[in-house]
Image (cartoon, rainbow, N blue to C red; front, side):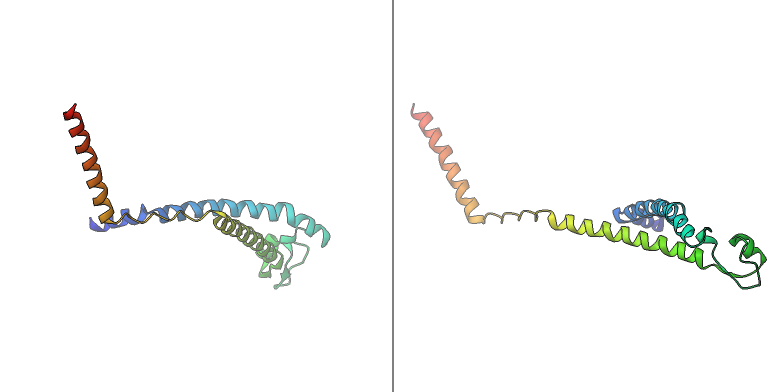
Length: 149
């Protein structure tokens, strides 16, 4: 039972929850960047380099014809799929650049925040006692004035 309690304390720490949220959002963001690269960036690049889908560029290693799609060529034997590798590499470069920009903005925002106000030092004990004595004397002085009336 102690192990379950220890696991519960570990799982409920703020850092673990933040990490889980980051992983989930990062996975979704990775899919967005993957779609951006495959559906928006690579088609024009593929058009420039011969009109084929860039991800289908490969070097046949088993004598396959280069006119087959990558999936067909892989079924026929081993291929060196450099186009697919370059697409994934471009995904990584875009993700790395975006993360770099996010970290850069976060660092800039941290530097722009005013420093936390310094906590006023505690009042020395002798000053506190003198204030209490003063307040007590003032209170007693008012009582004696009230009695005199």
